[in-house]
Length: 127
Image 1: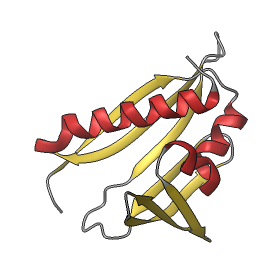
Image 2: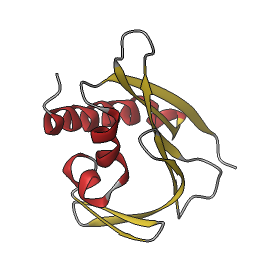
Image 3: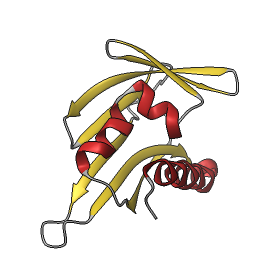
Image 4: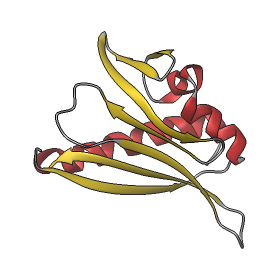
């Protein structure tokens, strides 16, 4: 196993969990904010950025709550998970992201997620 570091990020998103889940779990939703294009065949998803393609397997999901993907070319146990958390008191919706990165790429990976989630918020009309 490589020395990837697990990190977690949380973003407040003004959206219903049901709508947000569509953008996290479907190829059409993911291609709106996460990648230039996304295709799927069953549990296999192809993410395309600037002509390069990455394959990921959808390893777990629960409707309106979370999706968990594992990159196919992974030599370790790393994954990325997009989880929807609803605060019981305020009903605020948060997107909780778990991902892994090499130590020297950690800040870059966090910035990438911040940019991606910023795009997601624009698509959702969230602030």
